[in-house]
Image (cartoon, rainbow, N blue to C red; front, side, top):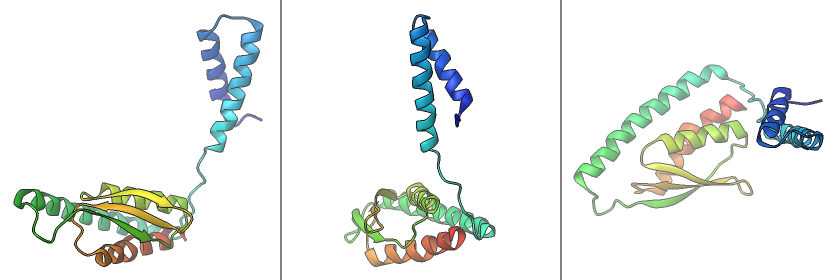
Length: 158
């Protein structure tokens, strides 16, 4: 059974348009299209399991508020310049969250917040590497991410 029959037919037609029409090209194009369709099915993400979907608006408004505050902080940092203690830096944060959808959402949240970017996820020890524009206190960043986002995401996707 083909997981994506329209994709298979489209790829076969595209193959035939790009090559001369012969029985051999039709068979080869159909085989390539079938394998591409199966490969595409293996890339399909799992369906998210929302345990407490009603907490999504709360998360949305928290993120919206944090993005607004972060925009102001970054703008202020650019306008006034760096203080003696302020410096950019890298930060490793251990996470308890394992759900792939929740991790993707956390990556989106951290990257869309100005002044911070998610660089890497280490699935072996469950930690992330972040770059922070104004890294003053590492413990404060870790506590904020774990208590403000991770805890809520774990409730939503538990």
